[in-house]
Image 1: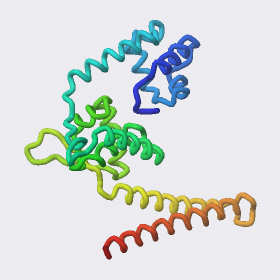
Image 2 (image 1 turned 30 degrees about the horizontal axis):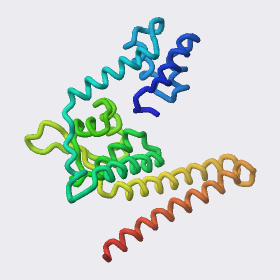
Image 3 (image 1 turned 60 degrees about the vertical axis):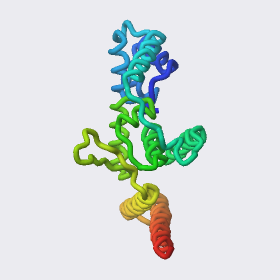
Image 4 (image 1 turned 180 degrees about the vertical axis):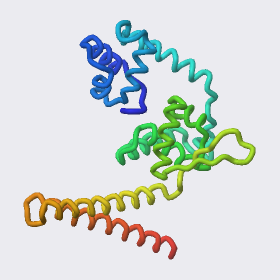
Amino acid sequence: MPGERLTLQDRRRIAAGLASRQGFAEIARELHRPTSTVTREVQRNGGARAYRADQAHRTAGTRAKRRSASTPQAPNADATSFGRDPEAVRAFRQQLTEVSMQTGLSRVAAGILACLYTTDSGSLTAAELVAQLSVSPATISKAIGDLEQAQLTRREREPGARHDRYHVNGDVWHKSWIASAQQNIALARFAAQGAAVLGPETPAGARLSDTSDLLDYLGTTMLAAAEDWHRRRAEG
């Protein structure tokens, strides 16, 4: 999974690929990782000829421990405030991460949303997210970028503050629902264009026409449901 740390099995697969004279890109595809991840892993561990999986894994573990020791732990007062059971909070946060991943988010992006959503303030700094998720600042930065692009989070810097704070949008699920509906409608229009090009009476054209009808129905129904929810909420 992109954004997660390499496992020992991953590193042994890299070593096997190098021994078979596979290129970095081919190895990365088999691992479902960016090519840059494999390239960086090999280069920081002696290069293609000297790479040893077990040694690379031990080195990575030592590096992670040093990073953890040098990184201030993020305050996690929310887990124990209001008489909460911190273990129950931790378990729910993990479950929320898994559920969010089912929408297509990476594990880190889903973890960020879970942390933000279960924090009373709804906001955390990058350093706090690094400490809570035990990943690198670069990994947090990339995942935050993906979340901001999807309009699921936003960043703010208070006057006099040195660091940005990342906030979860309170209507994150509503925005996700609307975006999905709009995507269905856009795909419906595209399918309709394809049907016209291929001919609506042909088998391929009829298939695309049916797809267009289905996606348009789903999209418009989803938008109507969102409007109904807003109306019910306004009425109290």
